[in-house]
Length: 596
Image (cartoon, rainbow, N blue to C red; front, side, top):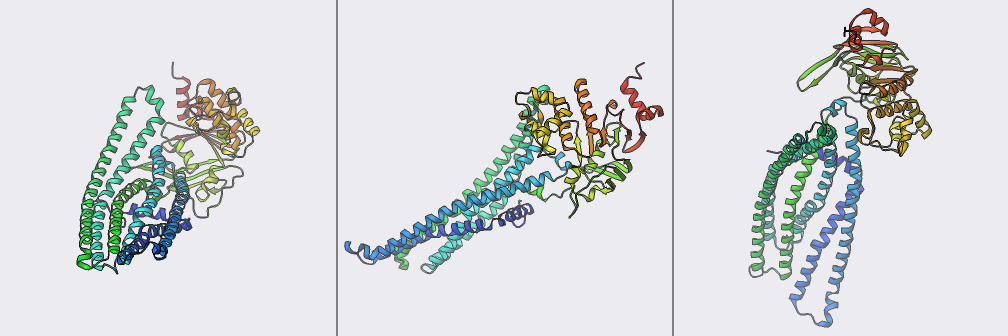
């Protein structure tokens, strides 16, 4: 069974985040509450109260035509003022509600974006990008649902109970007590049924997130889907997720309908009681006609409010279910976090040291040790190649340098500074990273090149493109540097994307360079252009080059061979070939020395 507001930790945490965001706009929130109360009191309760006074006055004795305005003038003025102020409060309510939603949604979107951007790569590797986007949108929309439910069903219902007790209680105390008892029963039954539905809403939201993830995964890899003729397979996965959404939504619908039927029956009982009281009120208890009008109007209003509260609880169910995914992400600890007051990394020369490195990662309950007591010193300005079989730890080492994951033991030093003690942003701004698959945004070529140096001029961007051997193909494009690359750079070839990435690294002008299989997926002509660009890029920089294709590292100052997280060979190309060890074995396999 689902837990209630006070018992459900995810719901409590969602309310915590929403209240923290609302407090930053307390003026709008208080204005909304006051406007709602004023609007409700004047138009819903003051109006019938004044009208009951007019009815009682009419019933007391006839009023001649010439005395209508002298007698009823004060009532007419009061009604006009009540409606004038009430309508003004209604418009103020609309204004403050919209302004509050706009302001808080901005804060919530920023909060979600920061949480996602500051999480580790391990976090993102285990989640669909589409699901995270969906959860962010639902998290923001859920706040709107919550504040609107507070504004319309919840506050008006609270007003109804308070004002009925204040205005009807002194006139018809017995009726007021009976009405409050029936409303208490109504509230209890409605709340109990609400608790049962809360878990169904969280399950429905989870199914929706899974559906969004499946759709995103298929669309992001649409080329693979089409080239392997797997449209039917992907449709099957999507259909299974879609059917799960239908099943969860159907369960939620049936539970909500049942709650509505039960509460409607209670509302019918309440209206039956009020009908009997109004019919015999004057005869049995001497209740005046005006008071009978008030009794019916107020009771009808409060019964409607309880009907609305049913819809409001349904919206609350959906809102808290929708917000649960992002709330859990916000509560999730950062696997890689800056220490409080961490200084920026200052790189002068660019020397790198890996000292007594221990690192393992877990996947479920399985722990995989990658490095144990690992040591490597890279002098400033040295160009080092990391080679070895797949899974030996080459790429992991570069990601630990970038603090995309944190080590368990040991230290990683840059110019003698422990990277774990410095801010992550300052560390990564000192390292130009060029991966195997160029990471391009769905933006212009100029924006992609200048990503590491946002204030770069067009001349600087052109020069970086020229050095990266990218200027020629860029200038042939119809829109040149203003050409939109498409999502992940899909409008460009692999070699073109890679040269854009190299131009970005050149423009960033970082003292440390990391190349992770930067040429492995290119054809020979593209590889030659990219290799020439990389030679320029590495000049004067401490460079770490991860490569399976050994021709890309043969000319480097030093080659480190890694096997199962350990250094098995270390030296320049010629020396390692002469040693006839693991590197020579790999080299001979790639150059065809064993063909004879």
